Image (cartoon, rainbow, N blue to C red; front, side):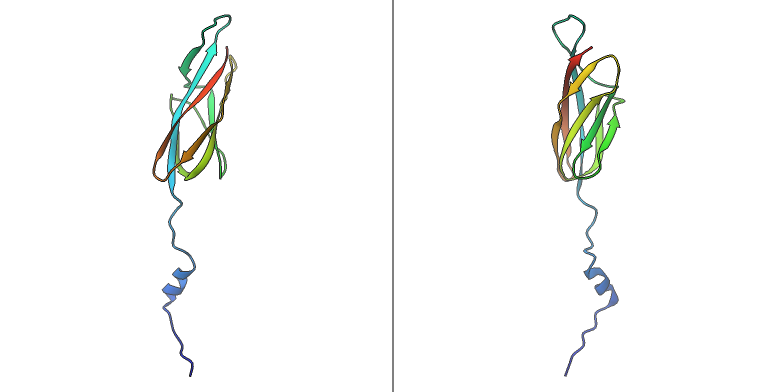
Length: 121
């Protein structure tokens, strides 16, 4: 004799979908510091960049880019993982190069980063 087991339709529907929420996310924020020399001046001037810089976050998904319009940049709701931050000077009066910065995003945490650049104006 064969027994039949009948499960409610809701139980069957839920068993295959995993019912997991959105992936865990965190935030990345920081500053861009530019050190540059003017003309024949030997000592560099270092200051927080507030304009003419684009910051790009690259990693597991599509790159996210923001333009500085204040002393702080911020990327919100970034999936947990390892990323690289790139900064590019978009102005035309200086030649400033920024080193890439590695950053790790943790669940429900904010990673604070400083991106340093050097150049000549």
